Length: 176
Figure 1 (cartoon, rainbow, N blue to C red):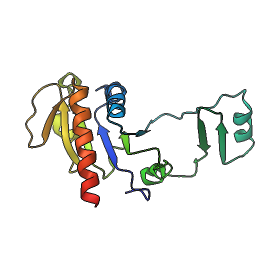
Figure 2 (figure 1 turned 120 degrees about the vertical axis):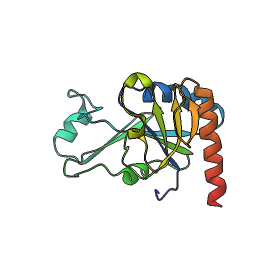
Figure 3 (figure 1 turned 90 degrees about the horizontal axis):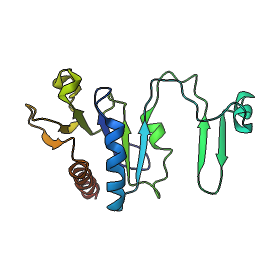
Figure 4 (figure 1 turned 90 degrees about the vertical axis):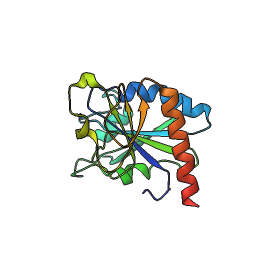
């Protein structure tokens, strides 16, 4: 767990299942329940949020290991990590402000030992059991699966948001 003790909940699924699409619907529903959500999204692609013609990009290219850009509405910290062999989920989670974040939803990082909701759609034509591991606490699917795990309707963001809110509340109760 991260030092700030912000609960982590993974959202795991095959590519193309609709993880981001579902999260875009669930996050505002959690917000209506006064749950401040942070997100860590893993990508397998080399990504850059900066633009080559901007000063911050040029300062990074000049060798700055970390560059923080800020305006009144938001700020972003970019950290160069080419020497790190793997991403460290705990390190990333520790970058979140616990005063502004009640829960971190983690998209990707499927090998991590964190509680997870597995999403599954039959149209992926992939085996259901392959997305399960010992850390999956619930399944959200478009049809009934053979499992002892709690099953949610992947097409009901409200049901999934309610489950996450209840899970979070239960998680807080267990920490006391």
